[in-house]
Structure formats: C-alpha cells, structure tokens
Length: 76
Image 1 (tube, rainbow, N blue to C red):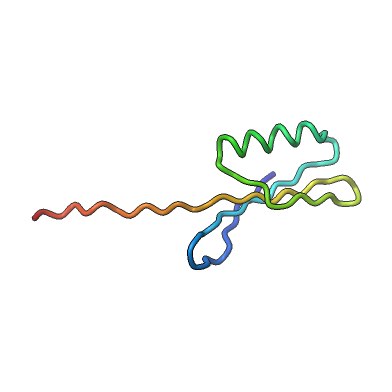
Image 2 (cartoon, rainbow, N blue to C red):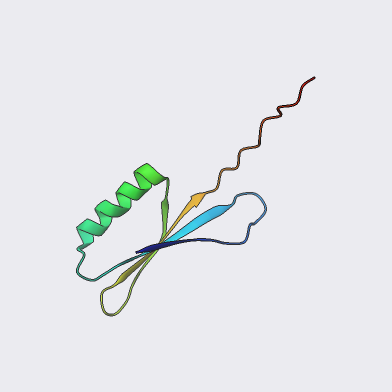
C-alpha cells in the first residue's frame, strides 16, 4: 500500500517521502482520517493528492529527516 523513497539530499533540510495509493472504494472521510492519523503520530505532512479518472487517490507525504550526531565516548 505504501512505499517509502528518498530523494537526493539538498543543502539544508532533507526530506523523506512516502507515496500511498487508496482505491476508489475508500471514502473521502476514511482517507482523511487515515492521513490525520499518519500526520499526528508519524510527523508526516501532505504534499500532493492526485485523483485518477477511475477514482484512485495517490497521496504524497513528506517529513524532515532529523540527523543526530554520535556522542564522543573517548577518555580525556
């Protein structure tokens, strides 16, 4: 149902992207609830929603990649 992919890094902020496809049988309100859940608990934000002629929704989400530096464990 979803596939995470990574775009080439740009200077400054790096983003992680996720594409989700919902079939036409899923209602608009159900899609909204699912996307709100992902946004609240996963930190995703909506980039684009595309509807195909058959009613399939393709949703593109993104979130920032937060890098943490490793602590120095050497002795003084």
